[in-house]
Image 1 (cartoon, rainbow, N blue to C red):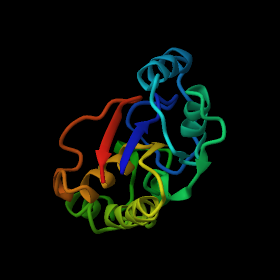
Image 2 (cartoon, one colour; image 1 turned 180 degrees about the vertical axis):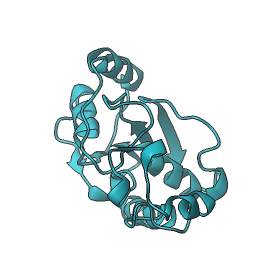
Image 3 (cartoon, one colour; image 1 turned 45 degrees about the vertical axis):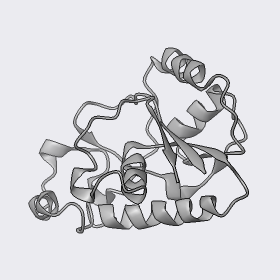
Amino acid sequence: MKITLIRHTKVDVPSGTCYGWTDVPLAPTFPDEARLVRERLAGAVFDAVYTSPLTRCRLLAAACGYPDALPDARLKEMNFGDWEMQPWDKIADPRLQDWFDDWIHLPAGGAESFDGQCRRVAAFLDEVRRLPARSVAAFTHRGVIACAQIYAGICPPQEAFAADFPYGGMLTLDL
């Protein structure tokens, strides 16, 4: 089964802001960015299309011709808890350095660890793999794409963010 993961387009939040589960607005460039994603998806045929329930993914799915994409909370970005919508360099939480030292296992902002997010994404992928589908699309987030790469055996967790993955970027995995 092939799954195509599509990252949402740019968001309208100040650079350096910690956001994950927060439903942030899209950048004013959304129409142009969405058009490019739609063009790259032209001709693709999917047996099922899913989306993170966050607006930045749902709107991109709709703009690409999938207004009825199935929302699944397991496709949401990591929950940064108390740190959501704070500038990274202004977070005064004494747990911040501990998290930077062990971001794979420790919960961010008291909420979710990367390992926890990967278990959530793995549960989604396990379920999708059992479907009678050959090709699936998911409109989602950078962290979810990293988790999917780990699931597919492409990289270990500590290398999941080594390469940049652009807004509006796509990755197809053969699972």
